[in-house]
Length: 391
Image (cartoon, rainbow, N blue to C red; front, side, top):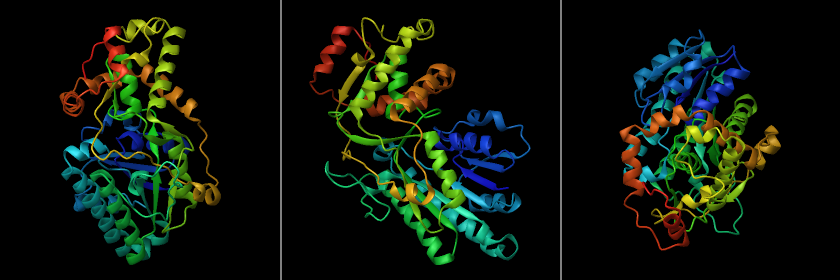
């Protein structure tokens, strides 16, 4: 039986991990620590609140006294560290929070683990404790179109404040393994998508924009390349690492599904159009969505000026986790996107509550409202279709 502390467990990936872990390991204790900032939602975990082996602690990962108290009082032997500021656009507008949470917060967790696990190592068994850090492919920076995918040993070349803060956290975790003997592992994953994703990222934003009949903002020419990983596959990979990963080692977790951003948006639009044709009753719940037969959802696409230093391509080489831990994604990009679209169609109360909050609407207005619209064919499509342009 494990006793897990899941930081950021009320956020997107953390929530999915808690649901996944509880279904496969119902006997384990799970303590979720989350500060419930704008992207954290305690309601995501409502199904577990009454369970005796589940705890929720609202708190800041920079609060060392709180972390040490939780680690000690709950006899935590596994930390799974998701808590992070993670949106590149927000890091460009306001980088301070990213440095505090991603760098200072990770350091605070490591110091707390060192204080509790090393001081009590003789009785608790340090070799049975594990600190796993969840990171991103963005720490490796942008790759040329023909460059080989990044391996775990590739140089760190972050280009945004977000990526730089995660790279710093990666190095801190590695150093605590080498210097103090903490049993640490790390993972760098490609772009996640799936249920519970806050609608500021491309896939979630595209879905809710279509369902509201609002324009879909596309940065620049939309030809940026990303690898996409369905969040449940990510959780499966983390389970493999926690069970069998080598201490001190990092693992790339890729989806084997590189796609151009424009293609992802078009595929989502097609999936939504098909859903409205097959389920006419959806029109009653989403009256502002484009009529699929006369005006396709893709007509909502609107190119906006690109964000500063927008990385052109990310790509991971995930052969280490495939060979060592026998992990391969189960979901194709088409299957994962279908499941994601269905989740947002069936859980509109969840995302509607987010969209009505001023923090979300203010951010959308700040990030997209002031971006000039380049002269593109998409502009004419919008005008001719009479689509409301409210971003």
